[in-house]
Amino acid sequence: MDRLIEVIYEQGDCQLLTPPGTITYPTNQGGTTIDLAFGSSELVDSLIECQVATELDYGSDHLPIRLRFQIETLKGIAKKRRCWKKYDIDRAKTCLEDLDYSRQINSTEELELYARYLSNRLVDALDQSVPWKRVSKYANPWWTPQVATAVKEARAARKEWLDSRSEEARLRATELGKVKAKVVANAKRESYRQLVDDTTQGDGLWKLSRWSRGSDGDLPQVPTLRSNQQVAKDFDSKVTLLKERFFPTTQADLSDISS
Image (cartoon, rainbow, N blue to C red; front, top):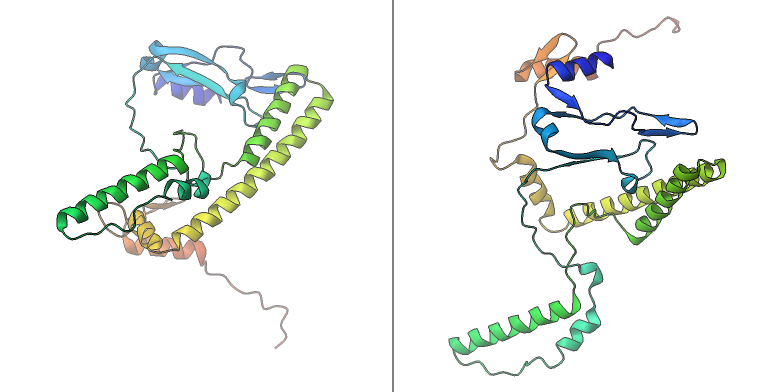
């Protein structure tokens, strides 16, 4: 550990940002500082704070560290999306009850006007029945109300233990942490299954295939492989190295077989 710090300081021109004495690994006896943050000289000059952020704790045995810098970053423009999970079909039907189906169309101009009319009515029905998603960089497809409740209860129990350090609070925090982990695992599993099901419908697999090939359209390439002192860069050497690794030559022990 000491050597790692020396390398970071000497070669990386980094400085320690974590204030001395900050407890990042709490225990019943107090705690220790085993999570350190380093930054370049440019970041050190713009550092606003570096401290424990208990409100960001999600159940890890290490406390999260929040670092804030006075720097400007480019922000992308998030695309607005509808929250189809909250689609109110009854509300949509009500909005379209008086839709004009009997209009006579005898010219291109009338067709254009009617198409514009239908488009405006559908947009209005969507606005009334499907809310917009709240944009968040922390959004997860597997985040459900059940997950939110489990995380909230586990976080509250852990905070209570950090404040009181009582055995009863520790046991409760541990139990709710296990419940949270189980709920999150189930939600992720269901979300993944839904993703697989959606991907296999229509041209989903082709989209996934095009994405995996990248923008240049070339086939994926096996990167340079390393094993002990061997380095495989070309195709033949990669095949040889993989063959030796996964299909090694062995001698069978036939001593227990009588001739």
